[in-house]
Every structure is written in C-alpha cells, then in structure tokens.
Image (tube, rainbow, N blue to C red; front, side, top):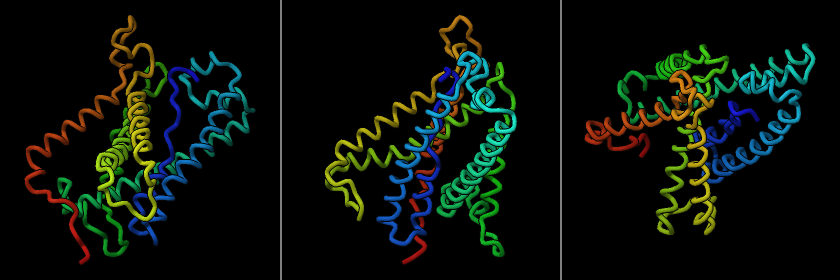
Length: 275
C-alpha cells in the first residue's frame, strides 16, 4: 500500500449499537452482542476488501503517484464502464456513511443538550413537535461538518490531506470515547457491577489489549501522510503537515479549560427523565 494511503476505519455500525441501546429490547444483552458482531463482521469483510485492492494493483508506482487513491487502482484494473459503476457504488456508500454520521452526531448533540452540557443547550435540545426531530441539533451538526470539511476541496500535490486529517480525527475521537470506559472498567476490577453479557475474568487482559491497540492506532493516525510533512525532512512544508494531532489535542485542551473554568461548577451529570 502506498505511503499516503491509510487503511479504512471500522464502519460506524459498532457505535450505532451503543447509540440505539436505550431503544433496544433486551439492551443489556443485545447491544453488547451487536457491538462485537459488527466489529467482527466488518473486520473480516474489510480485510477481504483490502486484499482485493492490493491484488488489483497493476502499476504500484502509478498508484503512489496518484496519492494512494483507490480510484487509481480501479482505473488500472477495470474497463471504463465498470470503473464508473464501482465509483457510483462507492459514492452511494459514502453518502450513506455521511447520513449515518449525521444521525449519530445529531443524536449525541441532542442528548448532551438535553442534559445541559452544551453551550446553547436550550436551542439544540428543542424537538420539532410535528416531525418529532431535534431539527436545530441536526442543522448544527450538518453546518459544522460542512465547514470543517471545506479544506478537503484543496489538495497538496493532488493529495487531499485535509480530508485524510478529518478522517483521522474522527477515528481518534471514536477510539478515545471507547478506550476511556474500557480502561476505567479494567481499573475498577471485580468491584465493577457487570451486566448480563460480559467477558468474565478475561476482561483483565482483553481490556488492556483493547486499550493498547487503540493507542497504537491513534498514534498511527497522527503521523504525517507524506515525507514532506515530517519536520526533520529536507523537503518539509507546512502545507503537508498533518493537522490531525493539532485538532485532536487542541479540542481536548479547550474542553479541559472549559470544564475547569465553568462546566464543573454547574454540570451534575445526565438528567433523569423517568422515576
């Protein structure tokens, strides 16, 4: 695989299991199984897909010169008509993925706003009485998503570095969100009250392996995409720098300051809506 390419992250289906858990019958068992099954199936399918891409490469140097884009591989391995069909399917998949991301992000924005944990919570927590949808939260996520994705329209040397960086930040954010409770459960040890479906005593090593894997992948996703992105490179250029670590660390710093200065004095946790 060329140096500018990165393996695709796991599909959002495993986060969907968590988002929909409170609406799932028998969630204590069903949501947990939904998470591990979606990871397992997507890992197997993703590995097969990556193998297909690798074996379809006809000209490795041409793929590298094309920025590692899968489209270049399609162009090498397929006639024009089939190339178009595959790109059409891929585009449709991206649109479905965008819809899934918008759904997940707007759900979380609404949920946090409902608990008063987001600036302007009263606005984002409003639900349209006709459509029964938090329209303001959906529009907020859509606008913010479009704004932070705009730089991806401009590439450096034909490589959409901004798009790669946004993807990296999304993956790192997901891993931080999952690694934190996994680590805290490991630290709690046997005092943790387990649910209906659990790992039994295997959590003692499986949790550490999971956190270690997420840490390694997170480091990988903040590395420069091209040689000129390394500050020690003779061809170093600020345009080639991966902004993923800047966005990730910057966001965490801003959130930490906001918590220390304001939020910790008034946020008491999720609000109970049922007795």
